[in-house]
Length: 161
Length: 106
Length: 265
Image 1: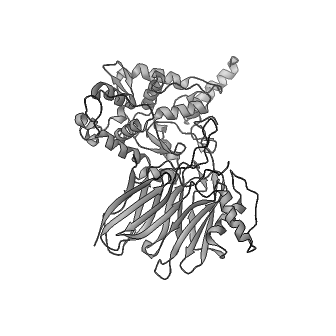
Image 2: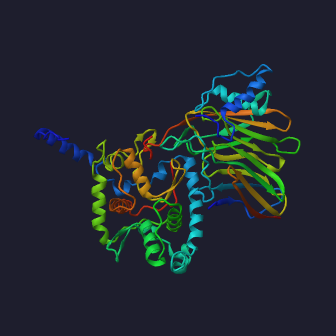
Image 3: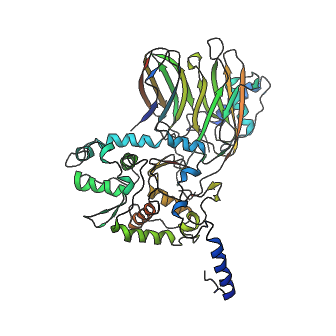
Protein backbone atom coordinates (compact mmCIF):
# COMPACT_ATOMS: atom_id res chain seq x y z
CA UNK A 1 0.00 0.00 0.00
CA UNK A 2 1.55 3.33 -1.01
CA UNK A 3 0.54 6.58 0.51
CA UNK A 4 0.92 8.78 -2.57
CA UNK A 5 -2.66 9.91 -2.92
CA UNK A 6 -3.41 9.92 0.74
CA UNK A 7 -3.99 13.44 2.02
CA UNK A 8 -3.75 12.41 5.62
CA UNK A 9 -0.58 11.64 7.55
CA UNK A 10 0.65 8.20 6.56
CA UNK A 11 3.14 6.17 8.47
CA UNK A 12 5.87 7.27 6.04
CA UNK A 13 5.22 10.97 6.62
CA UNK A 14 5.03 10.52 10.34
CA UNK A 15 8.34 8.72 10.44
CA UNK A 16 9.99 11.37 8.26
CA UNK A 17 9.22 13.91 10.96
CA UNK A 18 10.53 11.52 13.57
CA UNK A 19 13.75 11.20 11.57
CA UNK A 20 14.51 14.88 11.98
CA UNK A 21 14.09 14.47 15.70
CA UNK A 22 16.55 11.59 15.58
CA UNK A 23 19.26 14.19 15.15
CA UNK A 24 18.51 15.10 18.76
CA UNK A 25 19.49 11.52 19.42
CA UNK A 26 16.50 9.73 20.84
CA UNK A 27 14.27 8.23 18.13
CA UNK A 28 15.21 5.05 16.28
CA UNK A 29 14.59 4.84 12.53
CA UNK A 30 12.74 1.70 11.56
CA UNK A 31 11.90 -0.10 8.33
CA UNK A 32 8.41 0.75 7.26
CA UNK A 33 5.70 -1.88 7.07
CA UNK A 34 2.97 -0.06 5.12
CA UNK A 35 -0.10 -2.05 6.03
CA UNK A 36 0.59 -2.78 9.63
CA UNK A 37 2.50 -0.84 12.21
CA UNK A 38 4.68 -2.03 15.03
CA UNK A 39 4.75 -0.89 18.64
CA UNK A 40 7.92 1.06 17.91
CA UNK A 41 6.20 2.98 15.13
CA UNK A 42 3.43 3.93 17.52
CA UNK A 43 6.05 5.29 19.91
CA UNK A 44 7.56 7.31 17.08
CA UNK A 45 4.18 8.83 16.19
CA UNK A 46 3.61 9.59 19.84
CA UNK A 47 6.90 11.45 20.07
CA UNK A 48 6.05 13.46 17.00
CA UNK A 49 2.92 14.77 18.70
CA UNK A 50 4.22 15.36 22.21
CA UNK A 51 7.91 15.89 21.73
CA UNK A 52 10.56 14.71 24.15
CA UNK A 53 8.64 15.20 27.42
CA UNK A 54 8.60 12.41 29.95
CA UNK A 55 5.31 10.52 30.03
CA UNK A 56 4.15 9.48 33.47
CA UNK A 57 1.68 6.66 34.08
CA UNK A 58 -1.42 7.62 36.01
CA UNK A 59 -4.32 10.08 36.17
CA UNK A 60 -5.65 8.71 32.88
CA UNK A 61 -8.15 5.92 32.67
CA UNK A 62 -8.56 4.35 29.23
CA UNK A 63 -11.57 2.08 28.97
CA UNK A 64 -11.87 -0.35 26.05
CA UNK A 65 -13.52 -3.77 26.17
CA UNK A 66 -10.79 -6.44 26.47
CA UNK A 67 -12.46 -8.60 23.82
CA UNK A 68 -14.39 -6.85 21.07
CA UNK A 69 -17.16 -8.35 18.98
CA UNK A 70 -16.14 -6.49 15.86
CA UNK A 71 -13.04 -4.44 15.16
CA UNK A 72 -15.04 -2.00 13.03
CA UNK A 73 -16.73 -0.36 15.99
CA UNK A 74 -15.04 -0.49 19.37
CA UNK A 75 -16.39 1.63 22.21
CA UNK A 76 -13.62 3.66 23.81
CA UNK A 77 -13.82 6.05 26.72
CA UNK A 78 -11.04 8.02 28.35
CA UNK A 79 -11.19 10.02 31.58
CA UNK A 80 -8.46 12.10 33.21
CA UNK A 81 -8.35 13.09 36.89
CA UNK A 82 -8.21 16.86 36.93
CA UNK A 83 -10.01 19.72 38.69
CA UNK A 84 -10.36 21.39 35.26
CA UNK A 85 -9.73 24.86 36.63
CA UNK A 86 -8.05 27.60 34.57
CA UNK A 87 -4.77 26.93 36.38
CA UNK A 88 -4.97 23.14 36.45
CA UNK A 89 -6.69 21.36 33.60
CA UNK A 90 -6.27 18.89 30.75
CA UNK A 91 -5.28 20.68 27.53
CA UNK A 92 -5.42 17.71 25.21
CA UNK A 93 -5.86 13.95 25.01
CA UNK A 94 -4.11 12.01 22.25
CA UNK A 95 -4.88 8.38 21.52
CA UNK A 96 -2.61 6.03 19.56
CA UNK A 97 -2.63 2.40 18.47
CA UNK A 98 -0.03 -0.20 17.54
CA UNK A 99 -1.24 -2.16 14.56
CA UNK A 100 -3.68 -0.16 12.42
CA UNK A 101 -2.18 1.18 9.17
CA UNK A 102 -1.88 4.52 10.94
CA UNK A 103 -0.80 5.10 14.56
CA UNK A 104 -3.10 8.06 15.36
CA UNK A 105 -6.68 7.52 16.44
CA UNK A 106 -7.87 10.90 17.71
CA UNK A 107 -6.52 14.13 19.21
CA UNK A 108 -8.88 16.01 21.49
CA UNK A 109 -8.53 19.61 22.70
CA UNK A 110 -10.13 20.46 26.03
CA UNK A 111 -9.95 23.31 28.48
CA UNK A 112 -11.40 24.53 31.79
CA UNK A 113 -14.83 24.96 30.14
CA UNK A 114 -15.12 21.19 29.82
CA UNK A 115 -15.82 20.75 33.50
CA UNK A 116 -14.83 17.12 33.24
CA UNK A 117 -12.03 15.58 31.16
CA UNK A 118 -14.02 12.61 29.97
CA UNK A 119 -14.64 11.66 26.34
CA UNK A 120 -16.16 8.62 24.65
CA UNK A 121 -16.11 7.57 21.02
CA UNK A 122 -16.04 4.52 18.73
CA UNK A 123 -12.90 3.41 16.95
CA UNK A 124 -11.65 0.86 14.45
CA UNK A 125 -9.05 -1.70 15.38
CA UNK A 126 -7.45 -3.81 12.70
CA UNK A 127 -5.99 -6.46 14.95
CA UNK A 128 -5.37 -7.49 18.54
CA UNK A 129 -3.16 -4.69 19.90
CA UNK A 130 -2.38 -2.12 22.55
CA UNK A 131 -3.89 1.35 22.66
CA UNK A 132 -2.25 4.30 24.42
CA UNK A 133 -3.94 7.47 25.68
CA UNK A 134 -1.77 10.47 26.58
CA UNK A 135 -3.14 13.47 28.47
CA UNK A 136 -1.38 16.81 28.12
CA UNK A 137 -1.87 18.96 31.22
CA UNK A 138 -1.85 22.75 31.51
CA UNK A 139 1.40 22.58 33.50
CA UNK A 140 3.15 20.86 30.60
CA UNK A 141 3.20 17.39 32.14
CA UNK A 142 2.09 14.27 30.27
CA UNK A 143 0.24 11.32 31.76
CA UNK A 144 -0.80 8.06 30.12
CA UNK A 145 -2.70 4.81 30.29
CA UNK A 146 -2.71 1.77 28.02
CA UNK A 147 -5.28 -0.89 27.17
CA UNK A 148 -4.83 -4.27 25.52
CA UNK A 149 -7.63 -5.35 23.20
CA UNK A 150 -8.32 -8.69 21.54
CA UNK A 151 -10.02 -8.27 18.18
CA UNK A 152 -11.93 -11.06 16.48
CA UNK A 153 -13.71 -10.97 13.14
CA UNK A 154 -17.27 -11.65 12.09
CA UNK A 155 -17.97 -15.30 11.43
CA UNK A 156 -19.83 -14.83 8.14
CA UNK A 157 -18.08 -12.30 5.93
CA UNK A 158 -20.04 -10.69 3.14
CA UNK A 159 -17.14 -10.57 0.70
CA UNK A 160 -15.22 -13.67 -0.19
CA UNK A 161 -11.91 -11.80 0.02
CA UNK B 1 -28.55 13.06 3.28
CA UNK B 2 -26.29 14.19 6.10
CA UNK B 3 -28.02 13.58 9.38
CA UNK B 4 -26.80 14.28 12.85
CA UNK B 5 -28.20 13.24 16.21
CA UNK B 6 -27.37 15.51 19.11
CA UNK B 7 -28.27 14.69 22.70
CA UNK B 8 -28.03 17.77 24.89
CA UNK B 9 -30.24 18.91 27.75
CA UNK B 10 -32.55 21.75 26.80
CA UNK B 11 -32.19 23.29 30.26
CA UNK B 12 -29.46 23.31 32.89
CA UNK B 13 -28.51 25.07 36.11
CA UNK B 14 -25.69 27.59 35.95
CA UNK B 15 -22.37 25.88 36.64
CA UNK B 16 -23.76 22.40 36.03
CA UNK B 17 -21.59 20.05 34.00
CA UNK B 18 -23.68 18.74 31.12
CA UNK B 19 -23.05 15.74 28.87
CA UNK B 20 -23.30 16.19 25.12
CA UNK B 21 -23.55 13.21 22.76
CA UNK B 22 -23.15 13.63 19.01
CA UNK B 23 -23.63 11.15 16.18
CA UNK B 24 -23.31 12.04 12.50
CA UNK B 25 -23.78 9.89 9.43
CA UNK B 26 -20.54 9.53 7.46
CA UNK B 27 -18.90 6.44 5.97
CA UNK B 28 -15.38 7.46 7.15
CA UNK B 29 -13.73 5.73 4.20
CA UNK B 30 -10.27 4.92 5.53
CA UNK B 31 -8.28 4.99 2.31
CA UNK B 32 -6.92 1.54 3.12
CA UNK B 33 -9.63 -0.47 1.37
CA UNK B 34 -9.57 -1.88 -2.14
CA UNK B 35 -12.28 -2.74 -4.66
CA UNK B 36 -12.55 -6.31 -5.93
CA UNK B 37 -10.51 -5.29 -8.99
CA UNK B 38 -7.64 -3.98 -6.87
CA UNK B 39 -8.20 -0.24 -7.10
CA UNK B 40 -7.68 1.60 -3.85
CA UNK B 41 -10.74 3.43 -2.55
CA UNK B 42 -9.55 6.96 -1.70
CA UNK B 43 -9.73 8.29 1.83
CA UNK B 44 -12.85 10.30 2.63
CA UNK B 45 -13.26 11.08 6.30
CA UNK B 46 -14.40 13.75 8.71
CA UNK B 47 -11.10 15.05 10.06
CA UNK B 48 -12.20 17.85 12.34
CA UNK B 49 -14.99 18.46 14.83
CA UNK B 50 -15.35 21.82 16.60
CA UNK B 51 -17.95 22.85 19.16
CA UNK B 52 -18.56 26.45 20.18
CA UNK B 53 -20.74 27.82 22.96
CA UNK B 54 -21.96 31.34 22.17
CA UNK B 55 -19.00 31.64 19.83
CA UNK B 56 -16.32 30.36 22.19
CA UNK B 57 -14.68 27.01 21.44
CA UNK B 58 -15.38 24.49 24.19
CA UNK B 59 -14.32 21.26 22.51
CA UNK B 60 -12.49 20.16 19.40
CA UNK B 61 -11.10 16.95 17.99
CA UNK B 62 -8.90 15.88 15.10
CA UNK B 63 -10.25 12.61 13.74
CA UNK B 64 -8.25 9.99 11.86
CA UNK B 65 -9.39 7.00 9.72
CA UNK B 66 -9.35 4.90 12.91
CA UNK B 67 -12.59 6.57 14.02
CA UNK B 68 -15.55 4.33 13.16
CA UNK B 69 -18.12 5.15 10.50
CA UNK B 70 -20.91 7.41 11.72
CA UNK B 71 -18.61 9.15 14.21
CA UNK B 72 -19.90 9.21 17.75
CA UNK B 73 -18.44 11.58 20.35
CA UNK B 74 -19.50 12.17 23.95
CA UNK B 75 -17.99 15.01 25.95
CA UNK B 76 -18.81 17.52 28.68
CA UNK B 77 -19.09 21.24 29.17
CA UNK B 78 -20.10 23.62 31.95
CA UNK B 79 -23.49 25.26 31.42
CA UNK B 80 -22.33 28.86 31.80
CA UNK B 81 -25.16 30.85 30.20
CA UNK B 82 -28.16 30.49 27.93
CA UNK B 83 -27.41 30.50 24.25
CA UNK B 84 -26.38 28.58 21.21
CA UNK B 85 -24.09 25.58 21.01
CA UNK B 86 -22.80 25.03 17.49
CA UNK B 87 -21.30 21.82 16.15
CA UNK B 88 -19.18 21.82 12.98
CA UNK B 89 -17.86 18.72 11.26
CA UNK B 90 -15.31 19.26 8.49
CA UNK B 91 -13.96 16.59 6.22
CA UNK B 92 -12.27 15.61 2.97
CA UNK B 93 -13.66 16.67 -0.39
CA UNK B 94 -15.13 19.89 0.98
CA UNK B 95 -17.39 18.18 3.50
CA UNK B 96 -18.77 20.60 6.05
CA UNK B 97 -21.86 20.23 8.26
CA UNK B 98 -23.00 22.55 11.02
CA UNK B 99 -25.77 21.87 13.52
CA UNK B 100 -26.94 23.92 16.46
CA UNK B 101 -28.75 23.45 19.71
CA UNK B 102 -30.14 26.06 22.05
CA UNK B 103 -29.69 25.74 25.78
CA UNK B 104 -31.46 27.57 28.56
CA UNK B 105 -29.35 28.11 31.67
CA UNK B 106 -30.95 29.22 34.89
CA UNK C 1 -24.21 -39.18 3.60
CA UNK C 2 -26.00 -42.46 4.14
CA UNK C 3 -26.32 -43.55 7.74
CA UNK C 4 -25.83 -47.19 8.59
CA UNK C 5 -29.03 -48.73 9.99
CA UNK C 6 -29.18 -48.91 13.77
CA UNK C 7 -29.12 -52.30 15.41
CA UNK C 8 -31.98 -53.15 17.75
CA UNK C 9 -29.84 -53.00 20.86
CA UNK C 10 -28.60 -49.52 19.96
CA UNK C 11 -32.17 -48.45 19.24
CA UNK C 12 -33.26 -49.73 22.63
CA UNK C 13 -30.47 -47.81 24.32
CA UNK C 14 -31.33 -44.64 22.42
CA UNK C 15 -34.99 -44.88 23.35
CA UNK C 16 -34.03 -45.25 26.98
CA UNK C 17 -31.63 -42.33 26.68
CA UNK C 18 -34.30 -40.13 25.11
CA UNK C 19 -36.74 -40.94 27.87
CA UNK C 20 -34.15 -39.99 30.48
CA UNK C 21 -33.05 -36.83 28.73
CA UNK C 22 -36.35 -35.28 27.67
CA UNK C 23 -36.58 -33.70 31.10
CA UNK C 24 -33.44 -31.69 30.28
CA UNK C 25 -33.67 -29.06 27.50
CA UNK C 26 -31.62 -30.44 24.60
CA UNK C 27 -31.03 -28.90 21.18
CA UNK C 28 -33.16 -30.88 18.75
CA UNK C 29 -34.37 -29.55 15.42
CA UNK C 30 -36.58 -26.81 16.94
CA UNK C 31 -35.87 -24.42 19.79
CA UNK C 32 -38.48 -24.64 22.52
CA UNK C 33 -40.65 -21.50 22.64
CA UNK C 34 -39.60 -20.86 26.22
CA UNK C 35 -35.93 -21.20 25.30
CA UNK C 36 -35.95 -18.48 22.65
CA UNK C 37 -33.55 -15.61 23.21
CA UNK C 38 -32.86 -12.46 21.29
CA UNK C 39 -29.26 -12.04 20.13
CA UNK C 40 -29.34 -8.88 22.24
CA UNK C 41 -28.72 -11.03 25.29
CA UNK C 42 -25.49 -12.41 23.84
CA UNK C 43 -24.01 -9.03 22.99
CA UNK C 44 -21.44 -7.16 25.03
CA UNK C 45 -22.45 -4.38 27.37
CA UNK C 46 -21.05 -1.76 24.97
CA UNK C 47 -22.97 -3.00 21.93
CA UNK C 48 -26.17 -3.15 23.97
CA UNK C 49 -25.57 0.44 25.06
CA UNK C 50 -25.35 1.42 21.39
CA UNK C 51 -28.78 -0.05 20.76
CA UNK C 52 -30.52 1.14 23.90
CA UNK C 53 -30.09 4.87 23.46
CA UNK C 54 -31.61 6.59 20.44
CA UNK C 55 -28.91 9.27 20.30
CA UNK C 56 -26.17 6.63 20.38
CA UNK C 57 -27.83 4.23 17.91
CA UNK C 58 -26.51 4.77 14.37
CA UNK C 59 -29.64 3.06 13.03
CA UNK C 60 -31.58 6.13 14.13
CA UNK C 61 -29.74 8.17 11.48
CA UNK C 62 -31.64 6.14 8.89
CA UNK C 63 -34.89 6.65 10.80
CA UNK C 64 -34.29 10.41 10.54
CA UNK C 65 -33.80 10.05 6.79
CA UNK C 66 -36.99 8.01 6.68
CA UNK C 67 -38.93 10.77 8.39
CA UNK C 68 -37.87 13.20 5.68
CA UNK C 69 -38.68 10.73 2.90
CA UNK C 70 -42.07 10.00 4.44
CA UNK C 71 -43.01 13.60 3.78
CA UNK C 72 -41.44 13.82 0.31
CA UNK C 73 -43.84 13.88 -2.62
CA UNK C 74 -43.10 11.36 -5.33
CA UNK C 75 -44.32 9.82 -8.54
CA UNK C 76 -46.94 10.80 -11.12
CA UNK C 77 -49.50 11.31 -8.38
CA UNK C 78 -47.11 13.69 -6.59
CA UNK C 79 -48.09 12.32 -3.21
CA UNK C 80 -45.99 11.58 -0.15
CA UNK C 81 -46.49 8.61 2.19
CA UNK C 82 -47.84 11.16 4.66
CA UNK C 83 -50.67 12.14 2.31
CA UNK C 84 -52.31 8.73 2.71
CA UNK C 85 -50.82 7.46 5.95
CA UNK C 86 -50.59 10.64 7.99
CA UNK C 87 -48.23 10.58 10.94
CA UNK C 88 -46.07 7.44 10.73
CA UNK C 89 -45.82 7.28 14.51
CA UNK C 90 -49.54 6.60 14.65
CA UNK C 91 -50.41 4.84 11.42
CA UNK C 92 -47.40 2.54 11.30
CA UNK C 93 -47.58 1.41 14.91
CA UNK C 94 -47.39 -2.39 15.02
CA UNK C 95 -47.12 -2.80 11.26
CA UNK C 96 -43.56 -4.15 11.04
CA UNK C 97 -44.33 -6.61 13.83
CA UNK C 98 -46.76 -8.45 11.57
CA UNK C 99 -44.73 -8.45 8.37
CA UNK C 100 -44.26 -10.34 6.06
CA UNK C 101 -48.02 -10.15 5.55
CA UNK C 102 -50.38 -11.73 3.05
CA UNK C 103 -51.28 -9.41 0.18
CA UNK C 104 -54.84 -10.03 -1.00
CA UNK C 105 -54.42 -8.45 -4.39
CA UNK C 106 -51.24 -10.28 -5.34
CA UNK C 107 -52.13 -13.48 -3.48
CA UNK C 108 -48.73 -13.89 -1.87
CA UNK C 109 -46.66 -13.02 1.18
CA UNK C 110 -45.03 -9.61 0.96
CA UNK C 111 -42.26 -8.31 3.21
CA UNK C 112 -41.99 -4.72 4.39
CA UNK C 113 -39.65 -3.69 1.59
CA UNK C 114 -41.96 -5.30 -0.94
CA UNK C 115 -44.97 -3.52 0.58
CA UNK C 116 -43.24 -0.14 0.37
CA UNK C 117 -42.36 -0.77 -3.26
CA UNK C 118 -45.91 -1.87 -4.07
CA UNK C 119 -47.15 1.38 -2.57
CA UNK C 120 -44.56 3.29 -4.60
CA UNK C 121 -45.46 1.68 -7.91
CA UNK C 122 -49.22 1.20 -7.49
CA UNK C 123 -50.27 4.14 -5.31
CA UNK C 124 -47.70 6.83 -5.90
CA UNK C 125 -46.97 5.71 -9.48
CA UNK C 126 -43.28 6.10 -8.77
CA UNK C 127 -40.43 3.72 -9.61
CA UNK C 128 -39.80 1.16 -6.88
CA UNK C 129 -36.67 1.52 -4.74
CA UNK C 130 -33.74 -0.84 -5.26
CA UNK C 131 -33.18 -3.29 -2.40
CA UNK C 132 -30.60 -2.00 0.11
CA UNK C 133 -30.82 1.52 -1.32
CA UNK C 134 -30.58 4.26 1.27
CA UNK C 135 -34.19 5.31 0.59
CA UNK C 136 -35.69 1.88 1.04
CA UNK C 137 -33.65 1.25 4.19
CA UNK C 138 -34.65 4.64 5.60
CA UNK C 139 -38.38 4.00 5.09
CA UNK C 140 -38.15 0.43 6.41
CA UNK C 141 -36.24 1.70 9.44
CA UNK C 142 -38.83 4.40 10.10
CA UNK C 143 -41.72 1.94 9.88
CA UNK C 144 -39.98 -0.79 11.88
CA UNK C 145 -39.08 1.72 14.60
CA UNK C 146 -42.81 2.20 15.23
CA UNK C 147 -43.10 -1.44 16.30
CA UNK C 148 -40.30 -1.31 18.85
CA UNK C 149 -41.31 -2.96 22.08
CA UNK C 150 -44.25 -4.77 20.49
CA UNK C 151 -44.53 -8.55 20.14
CA UNK C 152 -44.04 -10.18 16.74
CA UNK C 153 -47.32 -11.42 15.35
CA UNK C 154 -47.70 -14.30 12.92
CA UNK C 155 -51.32 -15.41 12.99
CA UNK C 156 -52.53 -15.20 9.41
CA UNK C 157 -53.43 -18.69 8.23
CA UNK C 158 -52.96 -17.63 4.63
CA UNK C 159 -49.24 -17.43 5.33
CA UNK C 160 -49.10 -21.16 6.13
CA UNK C 161 -47.69 -22.32 2.79
CA UNK C 162 -44.99 -19.62 2.94
CA UNK C 163 -44.06 -20.58 6.48
CA UNK C 164 -43.75 -24.20 5.38
CA UNK C 165 -41.56 -23.28 2.37
CA UNK C 166 -39.40 -21.19 4.64
CA UNK C 167 -39.16 -24.01 7.15
CA UNK C 168 -38.04 -26.38 4.41
CA UNK C 169 -35.38 -23.91 3.27
CA UNK C 170 -34.22 -23.41 6.85
CA UNK C 171 -33.77 -27.15 7.23
CA UNK C 172 -32.24 -27.80 3.83
CA UNK C 173 -28.54 -28.67 3.66
CA UNK C 174 -26.98 -26.51 0.97
CA UNK C 175 -23.71 -25.31 -0.46
CA UNK C 176 -20.14 -26.50 -0.34
CA UNK C 177 -20.20 -27.09 3.39
CA UNK C 178 -23.46 -29.01 3.20
CA UNK C 179 -24.88 -27.07 6.12
CA UNK C 180 -28.41 -26.04 6.90
CA UNK C 181 -29.40 -23.09 9.08
CA UNK C 182 -30.52 -25.59 11.70
CA UNK C 183 -27.01 -26.87 12.40
CA UNK C 184 -25.84 -23.54 13.78
CA UNK C 185 -28.96 -21.71 14.83
CA UNK C 186 -31.08 -24.48 16.34
CA UNK C 187 -28.59 -27.13 17.34
CA UNK C 188 -25.58 -25.07 18.42
CA UNK C 189 -26.78 -21.64 19.43
CA UNK C 190 -24.80 -20.20 22.31
CA UNK C 191 -21.63 -22.05 21.35
CA UNK C 192 -18.70 -20.05 19.96
CA UNK C 193 -17.84 -19.67 16.29
CA UNK C 194 -14.78 -17.51 15.53
CA UNK C 195 -14.94 -16.11 19.05
CA UNK C 196 -18.57 -15.01 18.83
CA UNK C 197 -21.52 -16.86 20.35
CA UNK C 198 -23.86 -18.30 17.69
CA UNK C 199 -27.24 -16.57 17.82
CA UNK C 200 -30.59 -18.29 17.56
CA UNK C 201 -31.10 -15.90 14.64
CA UNK C 202 -34.47 -14.31 15.35
CA UNK C 203 -35.18 -11.25 13.19
CA UNK C 204 -36.38 -9.12 16.08
CA UNK C 205 -34.41 -6.01 15.18
CA UNK C 206 -34.47 -5.54 11.43
CA UNK C 207 -33.47 -3.44 9.63
CA UNK C 208 -30.41 -3.23 11.84
CA UNK C 209 -27.05 -1.52 12.14
CA UNK C 210 -24.44 -4.20 11.81
CA UNK C 211 -20.98 -3.29 13.10
CA UNK C 212 -19.50 -5.48 10.37
CA UNK C 213 -21.29 -3.41 7.68
CA UNK C 214 -20.88 -0.09 9.49
CA UNK C 215 -24.28 0.61 8.01
CA UNK C 216 -27.93 -0.30 8.32
CA UNK C 217 -29.06 -3.36 6.37
CA UNK C 218 -32.08 -5.57 5.81
CA UNK C 219 -32.79 -9.12 6.85
CA UNK C 220 -32.24 -10.25 3.28
CA UNK C 221 -28.77 -8.74 3.32
CA UNK C 222 -27.97 -10.63 6.49
CA UNK C 223 -29.31 -13.88 5.02
CA UNK C 224 -27.10 -13.34 1.97
CA UNK C 225 -24.09 -12.74 4.26
CA UNK C 226 -24.72 -16.04 5.97
CA UNK C 227 -25.20 -17.91 2.72
CA UNK C 228 -22.00 -16.48 1.25
CA UNK C 229 -20.12 -17.33 4.43
CA UNK C 230 -21.46 -20.85 4.36
CA UNK C 231 -20.55 -21.16 0.67
CA UNK C 232 -24.08 -21.41 -0.64
CA UNK C 233 -25.57 -19.89 -3.79
CA UNK C 234 -27.52 -16.82 -2.75
CA UNK C 235 -30.99 -16.02 -4.01
CA UNK C 236 -31.73 -12.67 -5.64
CA UNK C 237 -32.98 -9.81 -3.52
CA UNK C 238 -36.76 -9.96 -3.32
CA UNK C 239 -36.88 -13.59 -4.45
CA UNK C 240 -39.71 -15.87 -3.26
CA UNK C 241 -37.13 -17.93 -1.33
CA UNK C 242 -36.14 -14.97 0.80
CA UNK C 243 -39.75 -13.96 1.36
CA UNK C 244 -40.52 -17.53 2.47
CA UNK C 245 -37.52 -17.56 4.80
CA UNK C 246 -38.47 -14.19 6.28
CA UNK C 247 -42.04 -15.36 6.82
CA UNK C 248 -40.84 -18.54 8.51
CA UNK C 249 -38.31 -16.69 10.67
CA UNK C 250 -40.90 -14.21 11.89
CA UNK C 251 -43.26 -17.10 12.70
CA UNK C 252 -40.42 -18.83 14.53
CA UNK C 253 -39.92 -15.62 16.53
CA UNK C 254 -43.65 -15.05 17.18
CA UNK C 255 -44.29 -13.40 20.49
CA UNK C 256 -40.75 -12.07 20.82
CA UNK C 257 -40.27 -8.34 21.16
CA UNK C 258 -39.34 -6.08 18.26
CA UNK C 259 -36.12 -4.10 18.78
CA UNK C 260 -35.79 -2.24 15.49
CA UNK C 261 -33.50 -0.63 14.60
CA UNK C 262 -31.21 -2.98 16.49
CA UNK C 263 -27.41 -3.00 16.64
CA UNK C 264 -25.52 -6.23 16.07
CA UNK C 265 -21.82 -7.14 15.81
